[in-house]
Amino acid sequence: MAINKINSLALSSVAKVNSLAKGSMAKINSLANVTWSNDYSIDLDGSNDYMTADGVFNDVNVGVGTVSVWAKLNSTSINAILFKFDVDSNNQISIAYLNGSSKMRFQYKAGGTQDKIDHSVSVENDGNWHHYVLTWDTSADQMKGYIDGTQVGSTQTGLGTWSGTINAFKIGMNTINSNGWWNGHIDQFAVFTSVVSASTLYNSGTPYDLSGISNLVGYWEMNEGSGTSIADSSGTGNTGTLVNGPTFSTDVA
Image 1 (cartoon, rainbow, N blue to C red):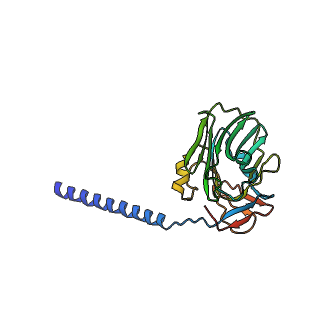
Image 2: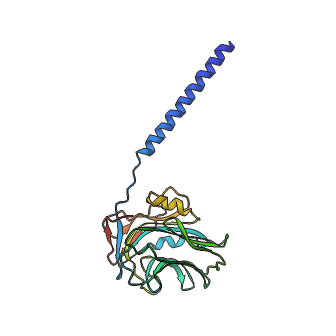
Image 3: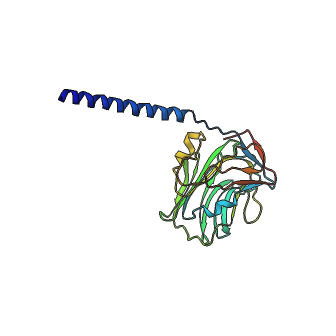
């Protein structure tokens, strides 16, 4: 009786292991069949075109967050805003190229207190794609900037207190003065309500699907290829809109 019971338990265990193995293999095969491609970017002419997604106002967390974006400059002849969230001139989050000093500026400004990282341009104006990440966390009192997975400048502290509610968000232009037009390509723009590792987002220089990362509230892949609407792959429904004629390009990150 004991031997029969042991044999029965052994067979049951083997069957269970086989079932789990089959389930795991099915899951792996299912994942392997999921494909993702980066087909298009948007091309901004540096004159008057840009992208907006007003719905994201309510989802951005000014206390903690991350912006991740791939971009390429076609011209460095003018100041160029990669993106900006703001309430007014005293409360804004942005990344920009400064023509006068040939620097990329990462900025978190709250209540009039400006924290910024100015990185002297070396490769960012070389005509190639580069990856930019800005993170902020007021609880940890830190703001950081990254280019191509590497932190630039020093960690900024002494962050100010945000005043008001975000009422403007633009990709490729200055929200306040209606200038600072980006002349170049932009691709794979994502916004998170947590600090996300820049190395994870950079992925050794290979863009990939970010939709599975937690706390994603805006993710515009720019893959439409035509039209003026840009789908939000974050699941929050913050559809983007192309304004004044940005074009789609197969030159991608």
